[in-house]
Length: 344
Ligand SMILES: *Cc1c(COP(=O)(O)O)cnc(C)c1O
Image 1 (cartoon, rainbow, N blue to C red):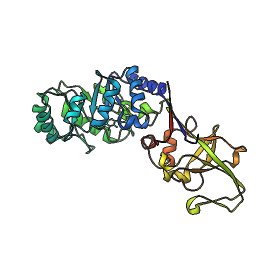
Image 2: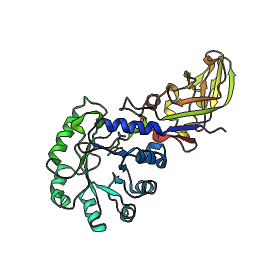
Image 3: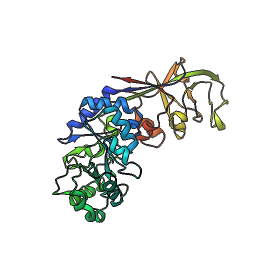
Image 4: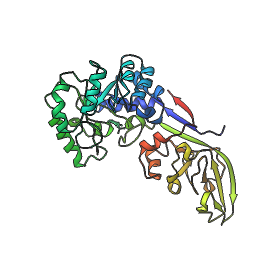
């Protein structure tokens, strides 16, 4: 078999949820948008529900429907994008809680689904989603009279505890919501790590569940092993790959592995990336192609059957650094061609 194997440790996800849950007195939700950060919505959500999560978050209503089919009735499913035109039937039938982002969404919701549960998303400075203070003042009394389930806002810089934006947004959130009866949620993974002041009634971690920074104590979740298709000897002076961007400086042994940028091995990571063989580092040489990557295995002294990109020796965040990106993008780029194995 030439497809790579992506192993997802569900017990590690459960351990990470429990560890994040212990960091606060608040109820701990779980963000499972984008197919649970690329790791498989059905397996991951089932694991989290069994572990104790009762509040789930997705980006769009269609993800909410898929999640409802997995979880069955009971757990709350909040939709960050709120109530979008055309979504009413989906929201109703899957019993989703849209996080209303604007006066327009509020009007649409009340018109289409009067009495159906909703939440409110406030903008405290990120300027991405949610109502700004002026809009909120105008809508507040009308919205609150209809018993919103949750009020949330999102931190822009929580991965940097020293960033002044954190305290600024916290003050803004207090100013907009203090004295209300509605439960509040402010912290994703980064905010959960910022301490009690940021926890409010519910935390909603995503990346920390899946083993990524800023949760440095996370248990690693993913392992990616890529089969070697062919190994060849090069003499000094021979080039490798598209554009001949790498040339052997010495007699070299080059392994070609069965994954490329179509599988989420981001092309930009080429020159800085490495894979490992039993913990020993083997540098990527030449360009990353669509389905293949070439790796210098000269130093190993043997031909490996497969090379590992992600695992105990290289975390999601190490690989993210190769490509000047973040762990989130590495996880959500993981390709559809892998054989996925879920460990329980
Ligand atoms: C994605 C997202 C989260 C989860 O963030 P992590 O950094 O992955 O923990 C929480 N809240 C909102 C609004 C989000 O968009």
